[in-house]
Image 1: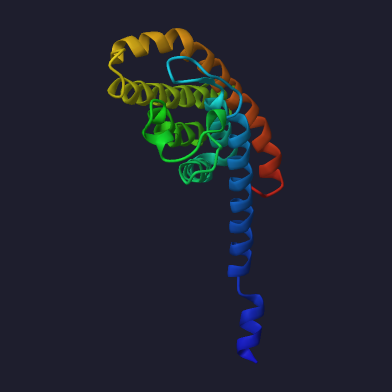
Image 2: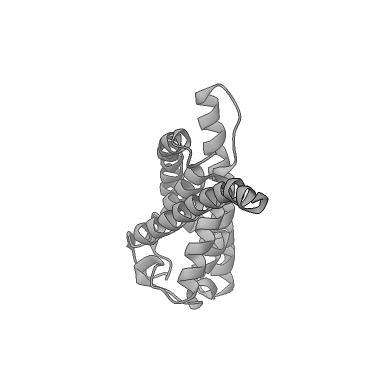
Length: 198
């Protein structure tokens, strides 16, 4: 009798329920990343113009750094496993070791920095701090991407690739990263109120 009472009221069931919600959210946002990744413009350099950093920053901002990085890692692992979910419907481990692989490898860093909690009662300051952290993550992504790109090509040095990035990628990426933080903060609010996120 004591065994049945304790099994009916033990709290781990609630813990599993919350964990399931988190897994569903992580899966949903990984799927969103797969969709966003197809919005790209192929370039002769081998590294396409995309809005993928918008998706990564959005996932981190909405889900927070822990769940956000988990969702991004799920997306990367599925892509490396062969699903055509990277830019231009690419997939496989070659995407990670190719010209644009450095950007992909550094995405979890962007998700973590975009998802770090900023505790302040001033909304404007909170947004500024979150945007600053996300842009810092973006710069790490750009540096990692340029480094791997330079190691795999004889045509452009690291410095030349960074100079090119400051023209072709970085201004656009800064704008969409800040936009992702703004949109993500708005999406997160109702999810917190509904109890899906803490």
